[in-house]
Amino acid sequence: MKTIIKNGTVVSETEMYQADVLIENGKISAIGRNFVEADACVLDASGQYVMPGAVDAHTHISLQAGACHTTDDFFTGTRSAVCGGTTSVIEHLAFGPENCSLRYQIERYKKAAEGKAVIDYGLHGVFQQVDSATLQEMEELAAEGIASFKIYLTYAFALSDADALRVFRKAAELGTPIAVHCENDSIVNYNRARLVSEGKTAPRYHALSRPNECEAEAVGRMLHIAHMAGDAPLYIVHLSARESLQAVREARAHGQKNVYVETCPQYLLLTDEVYERKDALKFVMSPPIRKAEDTEALWQGLADGSIDVVATDYCPFNFATDKQLGKDDFTKCPNGGTGIEERVMAMFSAGVMQGRITPSQFVKLLSTNPARIYGAYPQKGAILPGTDADIILIEPQAQGEISIRNMHGVVDYTIFEGMRLQGCLRIVLSRGEIVYRDGVFTGQEGTGRFLVRRV
Ligand code: URP
Ligand code: ZN
Image 1: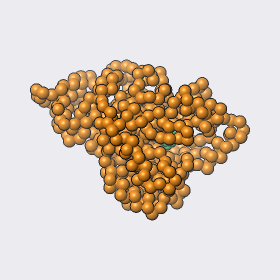
Image 2: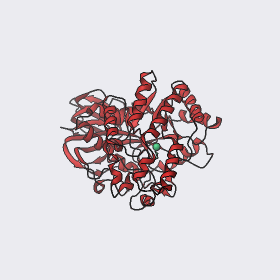
Image 3: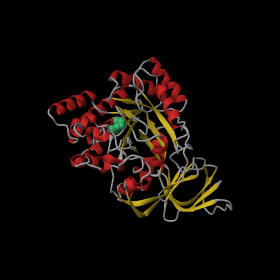
Image 4: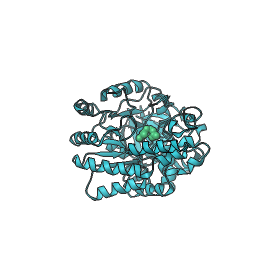
């Protein structure tokens, strides 16, 4: 099976150029001009950008949170992803039973995704306890393509600083990035209890219980601990506060090299005014939506390269049911929001088309960097001969709108409802197959493969 994408503008992390792309057997076989292939399927990309499929390095497609489970399974979650231009996901796992091994959750998720996912998927390991067995497992799992691990500083299995140091020391040896959810657990818990005892239970108090300093303090602490561990690779997930970004800049200025920063569209495109809305529960997520000064600082961070990745932290719970658990008390609301289908075009429109980032920066932030940092590059994240033909075609001059009415997931809302889009996603290819075209999912359940990642 051959496909030629003709007349488009190919975009990489460093350049843009007019070229045709020849695809054979799911791989890019050549980039050039005037390919003559009588039996090829030809896609005319005149006036369109031809970009590597986006990689979402932070999803919670399948997550149990108290009594609620996210709305998706790996079929519906990845269908929604691909209909938004994302051609690989790397899932952050839920916690398993107390004292379970790292492998226990990996095996569960592999089973859940196999035969369901429509695009390729990787898995990050998750730490619940640190001991010699789990540290040994890190090494074994990394050799099997689980080349990254997550630690939480809040929630049920928040790690102590000493345990974080142990994980970082092993990571420095293996080269595996450690993704960290940075919030000061004891301050968050104190704030939550205090606010509830004062009768302050509306969604706006969710944001007030997790102020910028809660994140920035934890980010600063992790920077020091990763440095102590020999400049271990530290990846800060969903950074949202301007003070956190400043701490990263300072650490880098002092020579710390292995630090990666991820933010998410919600921290760039929304402000804390959402907590005054009637549907404020939709925005109960951690960290919370911040102030306009933070969004401005984050856009600056994208433009100057201080932020490396834009991922989603996709964690969908239905508004009509699950989220309503928090209607009388924000602490009862399952945390998380939408974004897996919205990320690419929201960032293209607000970033590229509004001149805040270039097309190449867009490719770098949403595709090349996450693939590279997490060990999937160049198989993913690049349009180069020999790489997987995961490709998206975007028409910059077309317009659209984000609305739950034309999305392909099963969650009942989008946090970006009504956002006008400049630019339209036309076609998505996953390993050479057209899986989305002009609003319609054309892929197949179960075609996604486990993504072996190597750092
Ligand atoms: O509120 C959020 N973000 N829920 C998902 C889990 C996490 O914190 O990443
Ligand atoms: Zn998190």
